[in-house]
Amino acid sequence: MSKPALLVVDDEQEVLNALNRALRKEFELFLFSDPTLALEFYKDRPVPLILSDMRMPGMDGATLLSHISEINPNSKRFLLTGHADINLTVAAVNEGKISHYFAKPWDNFELIAELKNAFSVYISENNSKKLLIINKEKNAKLALLNSSMELEINKSKEKLAVVSSKEVKNFARLKKTFITFVGIYAKSIALHNQEYTKHNYRVASHARYIAEQQGCDKLLSFQIYIAGLLYEAGKLALPQELLKKPYESLNHQEQSQFNSFYQIGAELISDVNELSFVVEIIKHIPVRYNNSGLADQLDSSTTPLGSRILAILSSFDNLIIGRQTTFPLSITEAKLRLEKLSGSRFDPKLVTFYLKMLTDQPKSIHEGSLEFPIDLTQLREGLILSQDIINNSAKVLITQGTVITKSHIDKLTEINHTHNESFCIFIK
Image (cartoon, rainbow, N blue to C red; front, top):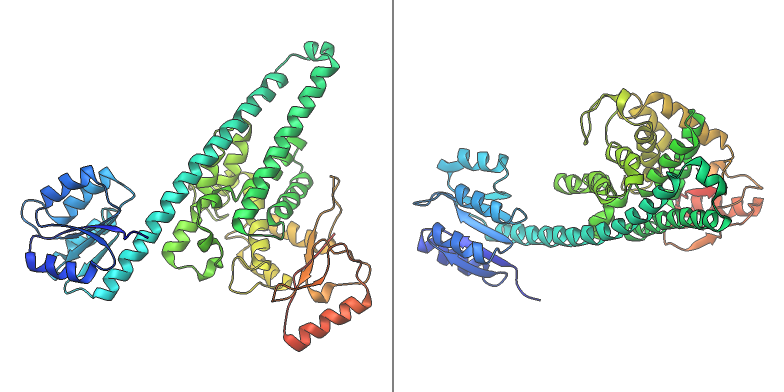
């Protein structure tokens, strides 16, 4: 595998020689003592990594890196700086001109590690952009499909009254194709996330039920359902290595990268006119009930209902399947987390409704049953499993569709006591 390309700029030849010795084994180096010549070189070959001294005649490092950022905003830019230049360096960091700085004398191991990590991020971001382009093309096809549907919908009632049965069937087939396409998209998201508990389907069906119980009409309830299926679309642009880690174990930089998936997802599906309301729902899921959050600063009363519903449901489900914390929380612990964040992060009325819904486990009026998670202490004879029960080693203990008996409960209880294993159990 070829070495990462690194442009190094320093007006002192001794420093260039020292950096050459330290970095040549790990990087393909391009060394310059003149920042102007380095900039001319970069215009022809925009390499991913740049390391520049701060204080140089003719053009300081911050100015050089600012010009480079205009040529290639995705580049990873670093400064070498002395103590006297620290204020200027900090200002350059805050303005986004540089990614990181190293104080002289630098530590070779730290320098190499930081540069290699930056290159990994650079590669990941480039792959994400390629994936975004691919999904934009997919969405263009979906937009074309919706345009055809819209033409049919906009026909007058009079014409619809006399339209041939063949045209009616074609329209029904087109609508079914649209729903199928959304389903394929949702499954692609789950596969990329390596998430096999049907998280987005569970969140979507719960969200639609809540919307209906809050008085939403069929169209809005269906839009909220679609938003639940597709709210993680932006994760298609994130590396799987990042998605494998529980959110609370990520460092600040990784959390910032992870949190971008809401806006990326909204951008991904924004070309589909029929999904414009869904885009608004997804975009504003991070908005907190007390008016702070990652998205636009909106008053909580104007945040879409679907966003407030999905914020609660996605958070709860991620807690119990182990995507938020290092270890999955029990149903009881996850409920307590919701209650703690009620009124600050989440809409308190919706939290109260959802907690009651989890307890009552109502039936859905739509095709298929609502799926509910329960702890081992809630398992009762006669309940039907909607998913396999697996142990910590990913071994299937009881298969999906099994009607629970006393022997099943005794077996799981014994495993729980003997091996200290907990289970998230999903029932119809």
